[in-house]
Length: 98
Image 1 (tube, rainbow, N blue to C red):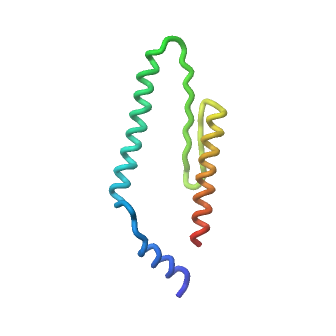
Image 2 (cartoon, helix red, strand yellow):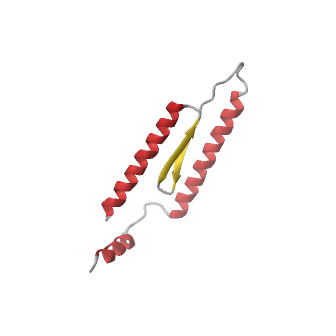
Image 3 (cartoon, rainbow, N blue to C red):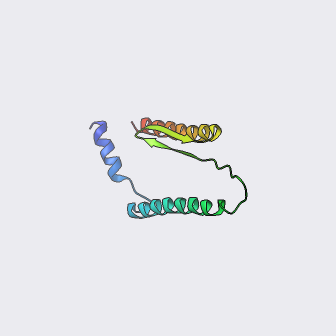
């Protein structure tokens, strides 16, 4: 019996804690909550007087490569650092299953 057979049995025997459909609904709901928070902050930012200095940072993955962009250098470093840590965790987790 090779290691490939063991992996297939391990995956078949794995139990999910929550159904996949529920996880998808929760994920989509979190995306909409995020959009709602951004919209609410945009609506409230117009009420302040004078110039408002707004900073933002966005990060994510394209395949296994982390990326990020921001209008503040410090926030960009934080986003890229978090994305790098997540990438490292995923790589180590993948290698540990082998």
